Every structure is written in structure tokens, then in C-alpha cells.
Length: 217
Image 1 (tube, one colour):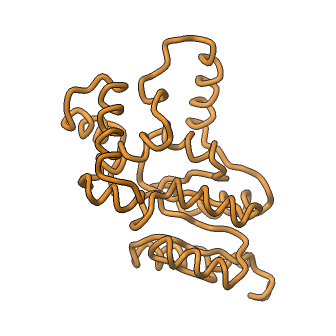
Image 2: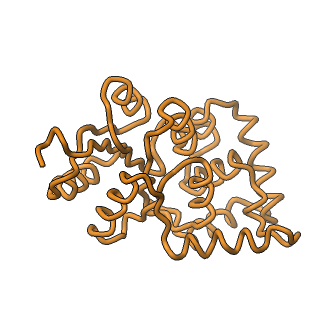
């Protein structure tokens, strides 16, 4: 298959070594190629406007704008463009939020290279990809949907979940407010709601949650 006929993929990740590794991996195949790279959301949307791509590989914690917002904007502006979330985060709740907002797959950076290629091909064929753990988690959520005993994290709004994970990464209130284009007071209000819903008394408990759920880079 010539390069012209290969499926065109763009990678959005702020780590050059990650982009390089993905490019080397993908271009060993005969049917896929990396046709674009971006280190932040601005670069990503500039390239999406100028070129045609078949798939986006999106890092979960991209600088400059929350990736859940980036995903939402991609699905709004490029409705049929599939997005694969690529991250080291292991938290299943965040996985479900991204899938509900239009992601076609949520792949861990610790996955075997062959699995990544398999996922890309499946998504490019028009399908979604779920790991066994993700399917079990979704089944649990549907099974428990009529019960009142929801896990506290499931009570968080999408925005509260975004703020919680950014706090877990060590970002301060000013940086989070800038990334989300809101005021510092708004972030303070989100923090208050997060601690209340999660039954936490301080940020230290949030950090422990992050460590227990693999929220790191």
C-alpha cells in the first residue's frame, strides 16, 4: 500500500519522545502513517483545519486546555473524526467520562505495541474499543443505575472531574483557571464541591486518591 493510501493519523502529545516512539511504531505498518504532530491544542486545531486526517491520538493531560474540552471541540467541529485517548492514567471513572463524550478508545501507555496498532485499526474501521476492565466497569454502572449508593466520584460533574485531576497533577488554582478559561473563584468553588462530594477534608486526600488510581505522567 502506498503512503497516499495509508490511513492518516495525527498525534497530540507534549512529549517529543512519545510522539517519536508512536511514529516509529505506526510507520512499521503498511496501512497506517503519522501525517501530523502537535504539542498543544492550538497546534492540533491549526493542523486539523489545514489537513485531512483519519484519526487523532490525544494525550489525556495536554497543556493549555483540558483534554475533555479538546475532545468535545473535536467532535463538534469534526464530527466523524475518531479520537483515541492515550495516557498513563489508570482511573476507570475518567475512562468512562471520555468514552461518553465521544472517544472511540482509551488506551494506556503501558499497553503492548501490538495492542495499540490493533486498537487503531479497529477504530479506523468504524468501531469502538473497550478493554475487559472498561466493559466490566460500564456494566457495573448500568447495573447500579437504579441504586442510590453511587460512588462519590460518579457524583462529580465533568468539570469537577477535570478540576480534580488537574489538582492531582499538582497544578495550582491560577494555572487551572487559565487552562479552563475561568476565574480563580470558579476553581475554588469547584474545589469546595469536589471535597464535599468526595467526603474529603483536604487536598492531601485528593493526592492519595490520585496515587491509588495511577493519575500520573
